[in-house]
Image: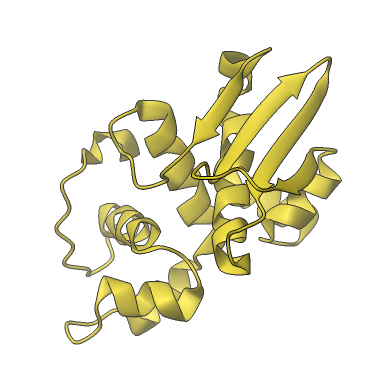
Length: 160
């Protein structure tokens, strides 16, 4: 789904993709909530916490875009709040994180720059995403056959 969106709109920018899909993105001070997705009266909204820096807002927008694309039926007439995108305990949250990692992180960049002397944190900083998304992306690439030694505590079965 992500590769189709990137190809269709010729971008991996979640704000641009939202615009093309007529999803309204708004910025508000949400306190501890990073973002939320809302479907209301046939309109789709993503609200991003205005207190976050641009890189965090981009990650949150990608994550909330995933909820629209993957879980739209689950949130009809209900809000989907995200306090932490690192939460793998709920399947929809994990799936949204997988979507965001695929959208925001280029396969070739990870393959070219991943080695034993580079930490996930280093890679995340260089890309402008959180470490959790880099870990997910590395797991995806390992599952696809890339020579990446990644140890994580989440369930790989989602990739099968």
